[in-house]
Length: 372
Image (cartoon, rainbow, N blue to C red; front, side, top):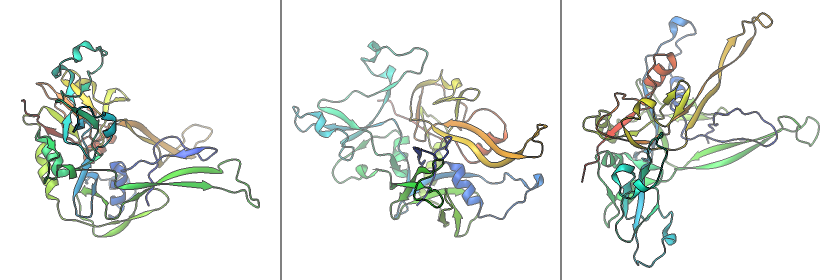
């Protein structure tokens, strides 16, 4: 059982509900792994930035690597009977016939007659469907690494007999457990008036499933603290995964016309104002498909000394900036020109952003959809 609370102001009280966030953010897993290494020390000279990291992703019992499904994919079915109602197959994403991609609005006929905000990025729209075809939902949220390679190469998925395309996607391999916490008044059978009740969401991975991540150092099998409530996780080294090595070729732009976001990124529209894409990408973007942002930041374990005259010498909890990270699986469609950025991060040199670079936040994989 693992606990990863969402990053919002939270204090126990009447009706308090702490939602979970899973998979955890990269820095959470990185800090857990780093805790297994020798301690550097507390002095300024002891501080080092000598590690790189990427992850976490998912690994199943057969050591198959699973990554976030691209957000621009659609499940398409064909009616067996032209008069059959589409509602009979809505959300039947495990019985699709084809997987198709959302397209830039300017490539699909008929959408020019629908008005959208000219100051905003134009939407991605469904492709032209064949006769009796209809959209029955989105693929499940996780895709095999081998299938992601096929996607980045611009290939399509078809659910034919005797092929395994329909095994390329899977649902979340975990379940949620609601954990109510009740604090009783001392010497009574009543709940406290203050901080008496709150609820958390715990995650239980399905049997055989694990988190997998890469770090630039050797860690022998050990146990680390991961998540809240002091829960522990076993850390074991594994051999390099070939699908991951094959994915590395897509880190370079080459003749690409779209990008897939592998890890949470930061798209800064203005200073400390975040969106789905950076403002300097807008001229080159033909479309973008994303999901709700991942909020992260807030109170930390760091303590800062107060400097005002009345409370000089006292300490208070520090606050780190809260940012809206772009969700992994986000897809960007480009025109002739591509951005120079290899990571979806602001162009700055402060310590926070250097940490994000070393932990591979905002890692983009580049693909090409072949014309015709």
